[in-house]
Structure formats: structure tokens, C-alpha cells
Image (cartoon, rainbow, N blue to C red; front, side, top):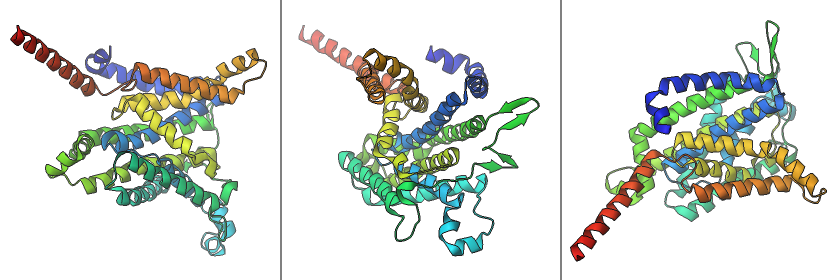
Length: 379
């Protein structure tokens, strides 16, 4: 079936998929904005998973602190598009008497650059670390960023501490304010639907960038480092620079996604960037298929939408037990069971890269042929 979709009718599939993605929010909007908001959140997680896939899937570097770049991008936008800085710093209020209201064309590059710089700063001291040690260092980096955001309200109030930053401007460009519904004739397109189209455009651009990176010399060098770093270094690959590039490139996706999250929610606080968020993003990449773009997208959509869908399952189950089970805990239990079952039945992910299956098949055939040859020789 996948061969049929990928080779013979690719144009038809692409056109139908594009139409479906364009019409989807309009159909969901008729059922309530809550469903469109779930789709918006899923697209943000797809953007995060694509960025982490560069680090984990292509370069083979286990990063458990990826949510830090998400937080950096979110707070960057919150500070540049809210009255927080002008209310707490008189010299900034004097420079911007009308307040800070950054446009979209400045927000996205700023989020990418700032998060990319922090990604390189994280990668620099971890160049000689691998496996579990690298995971522990990146995990600590993510927690350090969260703790800093939680405590940088004294003596200088930069992040407003655990209270978070509110009154964040929505995205606006070319006279279009995504924070307000758009009237077309007699049809109203809600704000969350407008954000859906913006996030979809960013995801499509990210998929194109990731696909071109995968096929480029840089992508092949990353995969060589992932398979065997010593052999890659012996072949003349500059593993140091390429690792830093992987951390920086992956972080840019997290920064852009964080900026979009802040504009969408119009509020950010440190509790939105906990360790569990990093674990969930890693789970999306692993569950979908490490290093395979369609699999990563599938894993991100499933794990971001599944908790919301299971709300409708956990409620009746709680009622069956006369309220003895907390619905939130029950929902987490159902998610964990679903993930365990999937990983037991599909250990390489729901949609692994095709070459992985072919290489295993070749190994199996080679092993079978060798066994048959040895048996014939014994006879």
C-alpha cells in the first residue's frame, strides 16, 4: 500500500492531502473551536519533533533537554510583544513609547537565531559525550533553563518568575491580526483557524528543509556520525563542527515553535516547559520512526492528539468506578498502555525508514544463506 502511495500516484495523494489539510480546520470549526485548537497544538508538536529529529534521528545525539529551546523561543516572543519590559524598565519605555509590538517577519528569525545560539552553547561542552552521559547533560540543561525562568524575577524582574508573562500580542502581518476572527463575505474564520494555517505553512517549510538536509552532504555526514563516529572521523568528517551544527539547526525549530506557542496562548510560564514535555517530544520521534520524516510527523500527531481524545474515554471509565479513579491519572495510564503496546508490536516505530527494513531483510537472507551453505558443506 505504501509503495502504491509513494510511487504510482504520488501527485494525486499530494493534491488530496493538501486539500484535506486546507479544509480540515473549517470542518473542525463547525464542531467547536476546541477541536481546531487541538489541531493547532498538534502542528506545534510536529514542528518540535522535526527539530529534535535532526539531533536524535539524523546525528544520533540523545537530547533530553530540547524543551529548553522551546522555552527560549516562547519567552523571547513574550518579552518582545508584551508590556512586561516597558512596565519594568523605564529606559525601554522611553525608547518605545508605543510599546514593543514585533511583527512576524522579525519574530521568526529572532526565535530561530536566539535558540540556535543556545543550541550551539549546549553542544560545545558535550562534544566528547555519548549515550547516557549526553542525555544526562542535556537533561540538566533543560532543567537549568526552567529554573532560571522561574527565578529571574528578582532582583531584576526579567521573566516575572512563576507568575509568567501575560498580555502577549497575537501574530499580525500585512494588516491581518490572527487574534481576531476574519470575516469573508458572510462566513467567519475563527482566530484558531487562522493560526492553524500559519502553523501549517511553517510545518511545510520545515519538512522541505529537513528533507533537503537529509539528502545533502551534511545529512549524510550526520548519519555517518550516528552509525559510527570513529569511522566517520577516520573518513575525514569534521565531527565537531557537524555536531554543533546539528544542535544549532535542531534548536532553531524549537525556538520558532516556542515563539508561535507564546503568540497562540498569549501567556507563558515556566510550568509549560517541564521535563515531561521533553520526554514527550522524544517519545514522538521514537514512536513514529527515528530519522524518518513521515514517521516523526505521525508520532507527533498521535501523541499530541491522543491525550485529548482519551478525555472522552477516561470520563466514562471514571463514572463506572463511582469516581474512585481520577480521570487525569486514568488518561495518563491509557496513554502509557497504548505506547507500550505499540512499541512491543512495532519496535522500530509506527512508520520506520524503508532502508532499515531492507537492511534487516538482507541480513536475514544473508544469515539464512550462510546457514544453508554451512549445512550443505557438513553434509
